Amino acid sequence: MPVNKDLIGKKLDFLNECIAKIDSMSFDEAVLEKNADIQDLLTFRLQQAVETCIDIATHIIAGLNLPRKESSKDAFLVLGKQGIIDEILASRMGKAADFRNRVVHGYNNFDFSILFHDYKDDLNDLKNFGAQTVRFLEKQIS
Image (cartoon, rainbow, N blue to C red; front, side, top):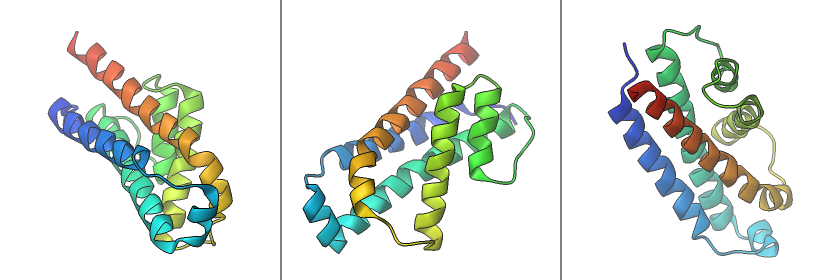
């Protein structure tokens, strides 16, 4: 199955929507630490964004007939080794996949103070993943 650029384009649009929704949230560290609704909304939106990146990564891997890996984290590492995204970003996206697993499976309690200090960098990683995916797709077209 070849890489479906239209499908990835739709997923990138959804990723950008998730990022924009998170960017539009307004809270400080104290509010995040005390407000369960904001905690839930932020973690859910981050989960959606990361899940979308995982979908993109696994689709590219399948479309290029690359070796499939057991974990979502490994999918990003494969993209890094193949030069589809840079290896530093692949490692950071692997950590995002770990975060997604913690959210989905309820592992550990979150330290929302740490999340507050990290989520803007995480958004930059998500944006960078989208941009590097677009560059990959543009190379595929030419």
